[in-house]
Amino acid sequence: MSRAIAVYCGSHSTVPRSYLDLADEVGQGIAARGWTLVWGGSAASMMGSVARATRRGGSRTIGVIPRALVDLEAADPDADELIVVDTMRERKREMDDRADAFLTLPGGLGTCEELFEVWTSRYLAMHAKPVVLLDPDDHYAGMLDWVRELHARGFVNDVALNALVVARTPEEALAACA
Ligand code: AMP
Image (cartoon, rainbow, N blue to C red):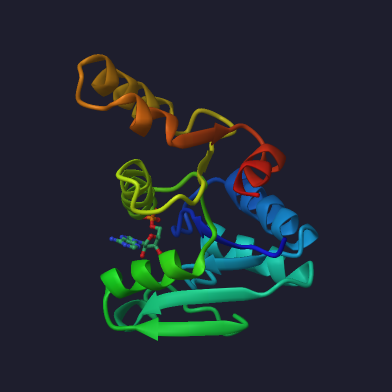
């Protein structure tokens, strides 16, 4: 079935090379399945890597970027569709509405913010789309430990804990998005 996958990932040029390669591999996997990429519309860093690899494989890329970030985040001129919105909230809504699954790769604060929003809305049953975290090298170990601690302390319930699929490889992550 044709699907659109929202990918959240790091946007900084300072991330290690191996993460650019990981994003490239994810883009290749999306294209191999004939899926569409929905992403933040940046040509930089991991965001650029995943988009270029998706297009190289012959699939569509739909970028959603706030007007204020068009220059700051290097909006991708090669996006098949680039939706320029007014606010960050609109960006998230556009991305959420267009995606059939949410895949988070290693990233920083913005990535975490996006992950927590789709994860929270999933456990609150506001949507039923897969929420997948691709974590090949324990980038998120500290965060996951903390959430398990919150679970043990009664602040996070089983539904929420189980709502996130943690994958070790792109193949595993994309299978969970299917
Ligand atoms: P980072 O993980 O900080 O490198 O950010 C990854 C991407 O998330 C960048 O394109 C940021 O603009 C984006 N981002 C940051 N905050 C938000 C937010 N509140 N909603 C949606 N995207 C965001």
